[in-house]
Length: 365
Image 1 (tube, rainbow, N blue to C red):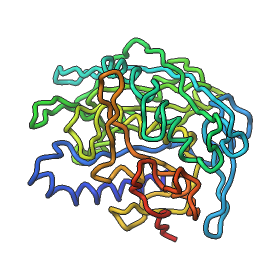
Image 2: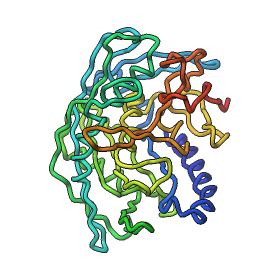
Image 3: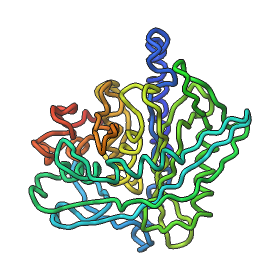
Image 4: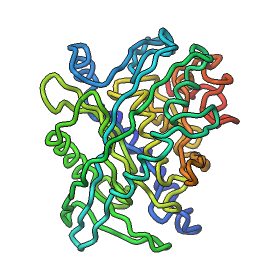
């Protein structure tokens, strides 16, 4: 897993460098290009734990052929291929985080958690392919060939919201800044944040069959130096105790205008929730692929948000109860597998129509 992280981080560095001139001229990206993290558990260890019958979220497994190899994969819920009328509901909890920086600035995720709980991530909304939760509607479209009009669903239970936890950020591990539009945001070293969240999971006694979501406000990760910013969210997996596999999400809640592509409010969580659903343990390897914007090897994981995140129109607005939310467009399963024709809705390779991804991925080998 670490080797794959290294490849992707290097590509992100190139992306940041390439965007530097644009940032200076237009000042449309006061922080940087949106980035997202990946699961860090060793793939072999995760597979062994799954095989041992460890307590975790409900999931199904299958395989596909691509190139000269067969690839196994696991996704959350029931199989839409063998059980297209099945319904799964995974309960969830929102854990707000309040960051206290050494300069006295405090940034809380409590208000963000309340907005998230009432967003299309958890509440049925009118979406391009029907009415429902976004990840549920996406998965129905993702496997449309098998589901058709059958009542398949993979839902998230309405979340409970825990009391906010205060995180004191040492000066060496984070700082705050202010955008040109006057928005205060925090930057936190990703190693510090990862260790902090891991410790919170161990102490929080979360049920491994549920999905904990750690919620920040305008707090973003950087890799060693602040110029390598910003990771807006990630999903990961760990073993808090013997016989348990805990999947979880960390999400920021960016103010509109801080990032390109419309990444604001729940767009980050829409990216991570869909990737959690379709690669919950970080074990879904595919042939290495590139994205249209960068014709070099980008990743070898089935991460449905990553293939879209660099598009200038990566997100789209959805209104729900008088509030406008932003969701990220997502890549379909067939894009990663190289299937022709696609099993996705309308034969597309990504969710929105017209599709951003016009054909299967360009593989690096």
